[in-house]
Image 1: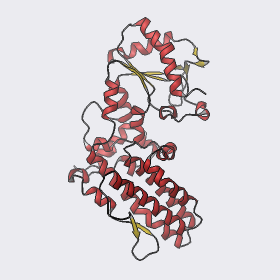
Image 2 (image 1 turned 135 degrees about the vertical axis):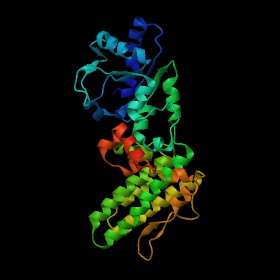
Image 3 (image 1 turned 30 degrees about the vertical axis):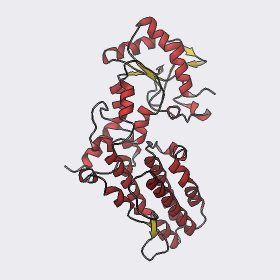
Image 4 (image 1 turned 90 degrees about the vertical axis):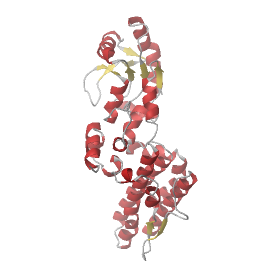
Length: 340
């Protein structure tokens, strides 16, 4: 089976670039497979081909050339390539047209991020980003970049500044600490379903934490487990998370989640990040289940007060998909939550 990125590369090399060279020799441009789609993450398979999959490409040009390049491709592209149509409808635009997205480098990035990545981002700007929005700019392959602009943008978005990174790590640990004892509390009251639901929520936070520790942008939930498993932290915690989700009793569930927390905390210490002596968890007061020790506080002690006062990253406290997928709304809610 063709992968989406392999198909995009061949489409550019065999069809799109020759058309551009014949029409405007030397046109400054970049070509890539960026944006939405499992293929951008390298995770597409046969199932991915039932919608929004095919001859897709990202072409980045100067602002004055965007409309002309798009119109030329719409008029000049053949009807199909490699047995696939060059023009098709998508879920976000149910119109049959060519699917090389033509934009400026900064405009393309802004359409995903909600802000201009060619400028220095302030801490609130960084916290308004979701991992998925950054991956739509940075994860896919770039086939050509004569001007170098998209390469510079991708480099700028490689990772958070250190103080913001520590703040986001502390916030994710705090989320874990807020609910970890409830797995045992609900189970001890006979609410096994509630205990399992909480364990699932915590597993999601701990998978995100694994990616954050390894300086990897977490994707949206469909691919979080797959991508977290490919990190050192995810590999260390993964067996315990699987055991927690499969555990038949709350006691086993509680213990496995505690071991997952300890594994991630050990990895945090290994990476030279602020950590406690000893394990991440301890008995929750006098109760027979686990609570988190002061891991968030250890991280926040290394964060400047101005950053420490900020809200967490937007996807750590907003779970409405309609907000997380809307760049302007993400930025607006992040700025509205920041102290004046």
